[in-house]
Length: 129
Image (cartoon, rainbow, N blue to C red):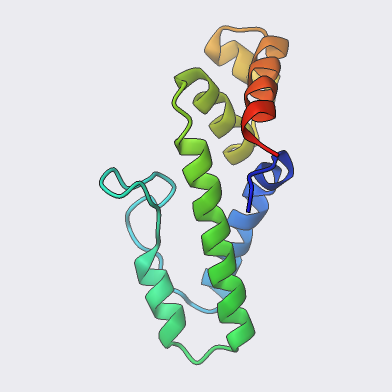
């Protein structure tokens, strides 16, 4: 599945749904930050939670949806954290993961909000469907 702006916008919802499943079904959380790619493999995973939900007696549809959400978050993380340009990566992390406004980013990154928005928009036009 190709990356789209709409998929990136759903990052926070996907993350919230994963956390809801973990709380609802008492899926253990692991102590490492799974939001950053593994340096060795370039992948992201939550093996403890994945293994736990597979062993639990949970509706197969719930298991499938949890796995779909994990896979979607992994693809989103791989795309965002795989951006080579540090400024564009910072903008993408702040915009899609942290849901930060361009005005706040502009104060922190010392660029105008319009410039940051244009940089991200131009990059996504080239990389997304």
